[in-house]
Every structure is written in structure tokens, then in C-alpha cells.
Length: 101
Image (tube, rainbow, N blue to C red; front, side, top):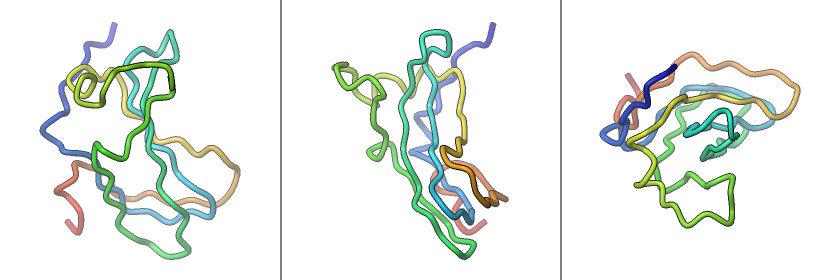
């Protein structure tokens, strides 16, 4: 079983990408129960840096009272999802302060 990780110090993510629809970054807290938080990165025809702070993440469970600060200390998976078919390139992905590196 995968142990949860505390990624709170990352302050979010930085992603270098090009995509013709959108990219969804998912922070999974319980894969078996399909519990996760997500943020979407807009399409871009050119390679660009996208900065995604913790504030950008929404809970898939809209009824939940959890806050992002409650869950970033216990993340079991970070997933990059492509909800639509299309062309995409992701060549860098890291913590929020890694943009441009």
C-alpha cells in the first residue's frame, strides 16, 4: 500500500506544457473511494509555464467541508489527466517554485 505524502511545502505545481484542450492535475487522497482534488490548466498552442497554487484546487466532492490545507499533508497520488482526446506535450512538472528551471 502506498503511504501518503506531505507535499504542503511545494506550495502548488509548475508545469511546462502545450495542449489543445486542457490538463487536469489531480491530488488523490483515496483512490479506492475516488476522492481527489483537482485544478485545470488552460490550453496553449505554444510551450508555456503554468503555475498552479494550492488555492486553484477544487474538491471533486462539492459537499465536503474539507479545505485544501487539510489534505495536502496526506496525498497518495499526483496525477496529470487529459480529459479530452487531442495533442499534448508535458516536458517538465515540479513544485511551484520550479517554473523556468
